[in-house]
Image (cartoon, rainbow, N blue to C red):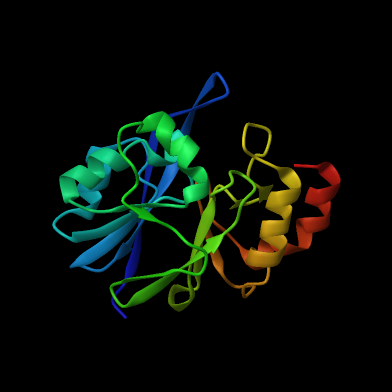
Length: 209
C-alpha cells in the first residue's frame, strides 16, 4: 500500500448564530504521489492546493457544512477541477456560504470512495449538524471524525441545527463500535483513538456536552 495521510493546519474563523470565533482547523489529505482527496477544505485554499501539489484531486470530502470546514472548498474545487461532496442534510449551511453553487455530489451513508488503493467509508453521524459524516479507512486503521468526536468528547451541540442526544447516539452506535485501536483524526486539535474515548461515554452523557 502506498497511500499516506498528509496533515496541515489552517487558521480562520467560524460564524454561526450571529457570532464569530477564531480557530484552527485540521485538513487531512489521503492519497499517494499520483492522486488524493482532501477532507475539509478549511480557510486557506492556497495552502491546501500547495499540499495537493501536482497530484490529481479526486474530491473534496466535507464532513459537514459549517463555514470553517467548507470556506475554501469552492476555490480549491475550481483550481483543481474537483468535485465537492457534502451530505444533503447540511445543504442549508452550505447555502449560506455558496448561495449560487450547489455541491457537486451528495454523500450517502455507507457510500465508498476509493483513492490510491484505499477505501473510505461514509458514516452518517448527525448531531453536531444534521448532515455530519465521518470517513473511515479500515486499511489505514483511521477514522476522520470531523466535528463529531474529539479527544475528550463529542463535538459542540449548543448552536443551531445541533442536538446532544443525537450526537451521543451517533457516537455510541456508529463510532465506538469500531476497533479500539482505530486512530481518530479530528477536525480540530489533537488526534485520539476509539479505545481512548470509549470509556468516557457515560461521563459525557452525565455532563451533557
